[in-house]
Length: 447
Image (cartoon, rainbow, N blue to C red):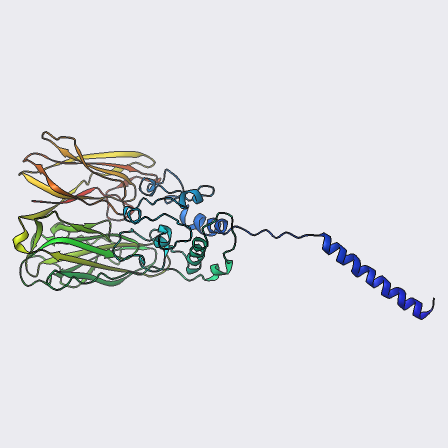
């Protein structure tokens, strides 16, 4: 074969190979399957941070009666999208847990956002999630926001996974309460303090009220940081034995021992489990606050992260003119210390409290911890014996019920606490001061 003929043959062979490859390419379609964005949310966020034991994994979780929300695979989407939240403030505002294409009215966004409640500065949306720490990353929050903004589809996969690369922690902040206008009240504050990693910190700080003359308070508004377990304001029975002013005291000393000094001198004045509460007395009823009254501000936070978190609290006391006050309110805290909850059991504890004089109850709220499923208060004795006057199933932000028509209890009559717990843990739980222990307290105002 001549060289020219050989060269021509080689060229023909090359063209034939290229032609075959093109034909093969044109006849083969490679399908790339895009993973739905919600499937990514389920696998990388819900399964690891939310659908875990004790939180949103089972109907037997201690908190299920409060939130009613399962976030396990196969159930989470239907339980989130278009569903009205149990939180009464969010429900009243027309929110859904997830409202497609509407970030402001998707309650889930408010519960996980890095910012404080940006939709409103007054709504009581409860603690940020995940509860107690282990916050989502900024990337995870951004991914969920983008999914909601794009319509919260179950099948669409258009949210960029590059958002998840931001692994910095999405630690919530707080919107400070505005100071009451001059002449209408005053503000007290717990300045920011550290909560060490994997630690519960409960502090007390005694401060004197700034009023220089007697005032009458008919509204108390509070605000605190995420992971707060409670905020309670106490006055003192005996003003001759007081802790140092403006000195922060820890319930637990550095060696872990409890510092119980001054606790027996406390008298409940306001607050409770929900650190973002706002309650008003019935018309004509108010607390009397003398000039420079010493108060103990008690904040309790828990931190389940490896970070150092911050605690911070505000309390606003709003006043009413003295001539508008017909009845001066007093406070009570009725405490059941006889708590023994066997492992793996549901148990209801009942305790009666009586009064030695006739009183008129104008407000009730309750306090228990995360094993509590239901807190019922009944009238004890008299013609209304056994009548239910209060029910709460939300340990995080319990109801505060104001009675425009006071509940009259004669001497010898009283109140019954009927509290149901479900101890899903593998150990007996008793009364105690940490969030891993339990409590059972009726707080209230009367005259």
